Length: 425
Image (cartoon, rainbow, N blue to C red; front, side, top):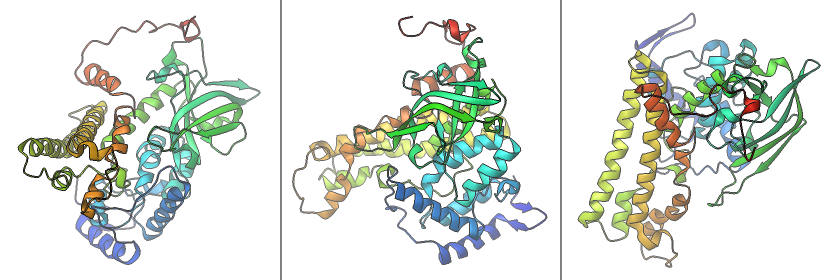
């Protein structure tokens, strides 16, 4: 990777690019405390509207879509330029919630697998801040078996007719387009009869409902498709080759979940709830700062956090130079999930009852600050172990596709999907 980019329009080093970004950010973006960023509630539409406004500002300033090709609205620059911009933008408000799933998953997948029209229209619209892209993959009866989808798309009179349901669709209520995986051939094994579609979410035939989680959030949605009509231009990739698209999509998702995507812009947590717990602050606030046991707990979590950052850099570089296969992004995804669980568990262990019981107003206001949401975050501690496929699935990917272990036995392998036993059949 060179430190200078050359095109018909500009020749600019990474240092020069960073200096220009530094000046522009100071004049155009709102300064924030990077250790206490603005709270962005992903379950509220106004958070997404505000993020789109910030994205439009970045686009108008010439700092949007840094690693996306110029012909699709980006800058066509390398990851070193994105990292330089991220470093400069750390102390400014950024549209971080657009990273996942719009840029790092959906736009990245369309870039790899979409038609020229889809790339020019959808990627550029997202970069401009005009559209949000989401995923429509999981199904009510599907579990972790993504290839076992039963939402169907039937060909009738030159049109695709979609019927079925999807669930746990992240932020779908705010989306403009969704990548939907449907079954288009029931006479072949399950991986061979799938097609990916790019669906306008305001189309007739789609009913969307919000899902209320145990922690009170309503970010996730479920969608019902009742004779939704789509044209051939909605197909991403090839008909009945949807598993290739989905596999690439999962590759991008696993990298994104762990923080290893070059298409993410800005650094830091998307909102205060998603920042790593302040274990040292918790220990001091609860009067346990000098307790060797608590120091050991906090130290273990901090070391794990540091190792995760090193793993992201190592795996990302290894994938780029070909020394590791693309599926190695699953290593980041798995380690991220395990690190998140350890950090949340450690925070609750240090906070004790104060993390789950309102014990009244403490004398120190700092105590209240570090105790906020410890118990609530514990309720959603396993979300990282489910996004992008379960951690068990991630271990299978690592074992079979990276380490070369034998594949697990699957009773439905090679069996036409219409002959596979499901439920009580």
